[in-house]
Image (cartoon, rainbow, N blue to C red; front, side, top):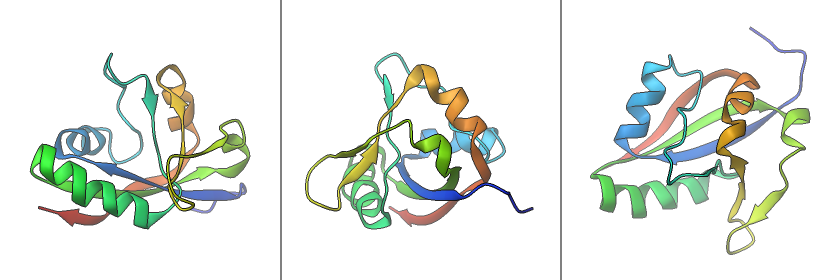
Amino acid sequence: MTSQHATTTLWRPTGPAELDLVRALDWRAWPPRLPEQPIFYPVLNEDYAVRIARDWNVRHDGAGFVTRFEVESAFLERYPVRQAGGRTILELWVPAEELDLFNAHIVGRIEVVHEFR
């Protein structure tokens, strides 16, 4: 299925619990945030996502996964790119209350592209 809208590729490092919830949503949406998670953070490059999944998720959750997904580019313009460290440490900050709207602009499926244990 092709979309008439331009898309932007985003990555999301995740642990096994969140990945199970994405699987339950048929790989088409991110689950609601927990009360202590007011922001959803997709990242703009694969290397940064790999570092988080490998170095943080494995240590805290026993496994880390990098997912890749496409979102309509025009929709993403509402979220300024945030630099969380070095030049390539770039992420979007999506408020938890906007996650359903964000999910509605995902094109295609969320896919796992790396797994670390």
